[in-house]
Amino acid sequence: MNNSTFKSILIAVGMSFCIISAASAQKYSTKNGRISFFSETAAEKIEAQNTQVNSALDITTGDFVFKILIRGFEFEKALMQEHFNENYLESDKYPNSTFRGKVTNLKDINFTKDGKYNATVEGDLLIHGVTKKVSVKGTFEIKAGSVFADSKFTILIKDYGVKIPNTVINSISESLEIKVSVELKKLIN
Amino acid sequence: MKSLLENHFTGLMITLWIIYIIPILIASYRKCNHINGIALVNILLGTSILGWVGALVWAVSDKKETFKLPKHRIWVYISVIFMVIGTIGSIFIYKNMYNKPHADIENTMPAYSLNAQELWKQYNQELKLADSLYTGKVIEITGNLSKIDKVDSLVYLVFVMEPDPDFGDKTIRCEMLPKYNEEASKAIVNAPLKVKGFCSGYDQTDIKFSKCSIIK
Picture 1 (cartoon, each protein chain N blue to C red):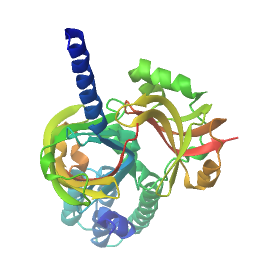
Picture 2 (cartoon, rainbow over the protein chains, first blue to last red):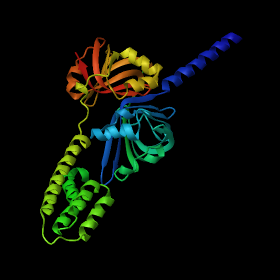
Picture 3 (cartoon, rainbow over the protein chains, first blue to last red):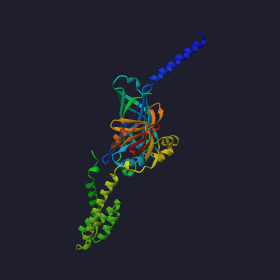
Picture 4 (cartoon, rainbow over the protein chains, first blue to last red):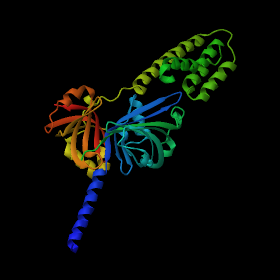
């Protein structure tokens, strides 16, 4: 076997590895994830929902991304929605919110077997131009080839530099309960 | 479960307005010598809590007249009228401002009307400028429909712009108003279409629209 044949075999082997790893890089995503938040005090109940959240999960690396448009949150009351966009989240200045992180216990989740698995996701949450490290617990449910990711967690408004005027400080809670629910479907390239 | 304010708003307002005119009522009942002054302080300065307390203290401590005078009766009438107007006014403001309806996107004149490709180009080249022009506004877009997506009970008309490694494609994605679902489901793929809706912005994958209607 001469040198050039050996080289070409090496290249062929190398390439097939690349192809295998590319084929196994499995991505799941949705453009209709649901994120809602909830806060309640004696004076006011605040609830809003965004049903157009982009979310993508790479099950080989554990990378998990959420992209949220602040203007996409819908409130029952138009006035609340207006205040939320104009006074609190300042969505003209900060129209986007994102989460970029990783599933930290990827090895505990068998994406090929139907079932419900506990998961921890860690990463950077960007809201109102402020990025914070968060660690969130949730579940992955594998069902009929889809991944249903659900989580519920709480954030403090002041962590993200959202100012609440003194006049309404008693009617707006300091913490928000955030509910995430996405149905991720396998991406077919 | 609705909030306290919502359930008892009318009752709350009537109570507050009655409390507001209590100094005048006391001054009239006690036949106060200086009821004119008390009433003016009460009505004009009552909103500052100090003014209201002042009027109250004055009303309970002022010298009494021997007889009830017309002014004692007149001020009661005025304060009751004031209270009724105040209550009706607050309820009106509550209904029209606090509870004002959501914008009727379908019947709003679009702030801009442009081609899907053009909108895409602007958001990708000058995000800040495009955000300030289009995000949060009612926009009309024209383009060749790429596909129709149905998720739960929602129908989306989609204009595909570029491929994307994470999401399959980058698009302009229009969530239809439920009343347009049927019409949107029958829209012809690859044919030109004009859609109007509320633009929520660009998340680096999709430009998203909601409450969309089809324009003929």
